Every structure is written in C-alpha cells, then in structure tokens.
Length: 127
Image (cartoon, rainbow, N blue to C red):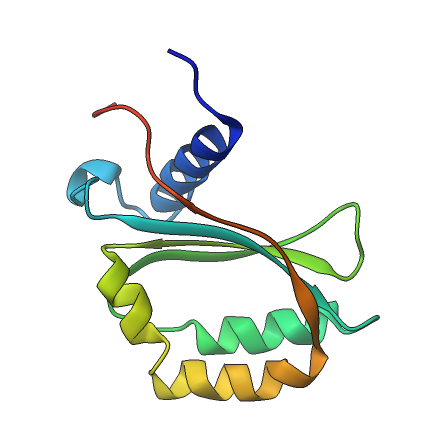
C-alpha cells in the first residue's frame, strides 16, 4: 500500500499528539475524527507573540483532542498548527468560543499570511 505524504504526516502527527495528551485513537471514532495541519506566518519578529495569542485562545475547547503549535525551523516567522478534534462540528463550534474570538482579534494584526493547509485522516485501522 502506498501512502501519500499528506496522509502519512497527518496520521502520524495525530497519533503522536493524542499519545502526548494521554489519549489513543481507539478512544475516538476514527471515521469522525477531524484533523488539520496548517502553516501561519507572523509579521517579522512577531512569531512568539502570535504563538502566545494562539496558546491563550486554545484552552478548554470542547471536542479538542490536541492543539499544538510548532515553530518552523527554516522560517523564523512561520509556525505550524496541528489540531485533532472528535469531529468537524466541534472544530467549527470552537470558532465561536469567546477565548478563540479574543485570540483572533489580538492575532489578526500580526498575521502576515497562511501557507499550506491540509485536512488529514488517519490511515489504516487499529494499531
């Protein structure tokens, strides 16, 4: 079986992130899990400030299994965000949470753009 890069990276990231939070993929319905990997660029020199706003806004989001922010080693203004949700509806609902709205308000002026974004799914069955 040949896996494309997006499927491999997404499923690997989701499994690692769930494990880091004390969860396993067996605890959720893999057919319903919604996972995203995306790149965001900050204004020059504002990456850590952006990370701070996103971290503040991501606390206590119902249905969120993992929300991780990664610094891009090759670009000092880029970050990668990996999100794993019990389902897509939980992700959509999170966008209306007060802390998420506040994070968006604070972060918007220092977001310089967005890079690659992928909705990913876990490949294979139980491990």
